Length: 510
Image (cartoon, rainbow, N blue to C red; front, top):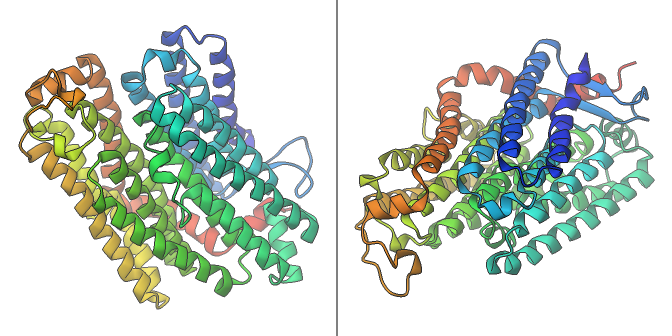
């Protein structure tokens, strides 16, 4: 039964509604969240294995066959992203127990957390572009609540920028969907592919394609990313882990799905746009990552480098590039979630987010230090960690297509990633502990790294935060070490992206 496909969306929706009635019972909310998180991981694994054995799965709602009814589609690409998102969100949930204050917990933090997952999973699973808009909005409305929850000055200063950008992109999204329906008379993604192939992609359809690219690029932080570094620096680190690990990947997923399935007919037109945006995003993201000395901005700019890498893979338009996109996106969901968890633990241990006020933490938090070092290598693409295979496939695809300049920029951005993160590792963990000063409130009553560490979290919460980080680290290392086995799944996903007819036949079968 393909009813399994609705469970990743239905389960967090039910949990979110249930938790609304028990907002004061934090223990119950945490328990239900953990049970739901484990269950969703199991469901996602089941979907991946079924797609591996049976091919692309579809679920028709209400007995209406496509293209007239709502349909969920699980190809290997969507299934792998649902699994990666389930693993990452579970780790972030555990980290939330250690880092989110009781005031936020009492004001529906876990309810909004699960509603955001509804939007993320639904975006990956839907086979209808209007319902993609609906799930985007569920995700974004939840993110609006999470980015403002707590009401700090920094949040209130940065949240309007985030809201305005996403409201603008949502408005453009609705307009693009309306123009697309007026042009071809359908909204089912598989049927759209057939209709656009029949009439030929050109003229007004190319304009609509660019409009969709602008919409999804705004949401993913591709090129039009001016809002992201500061907006993502305002909420707690658990929320940043959700945003950095999941939200930008939904925008990237929409770009990949749209331009491999719906608008594949004029690749010379769209690929040049995507390639240019990828180049600018990687370059400016890398420059931003090495230019700043505060941890939040360094980590936020590293999000942009990953976004640019995925866009580069899509721009190649060949099988190696598509395989690299899938592998790298799975890696990026896991590693960016881990990056923000470790970043939050680092700042809590140092009691500052400024590199100039850190140092000596390797003596008291060696486990945190070495996890951060391994993550830096994984994000750079050092073998045998999870980032290596995806980057190699993308760069190889670029070289095969003659994109030498873009390939060199991609390699240069990896070096900038390494430099920016090793800078944190060197100065925060191996540098000399600075003396406290009167202007630095975070150091006002501490003199030694050991005292800083003890005052960061209670020991129980320190252990819980470490468990969440180790949980994700296992996958970051494990995916790299078992790359040959993982590639079997990735190759199946890449084949469907490279040959959209497989998706079309699965959805529109008689």
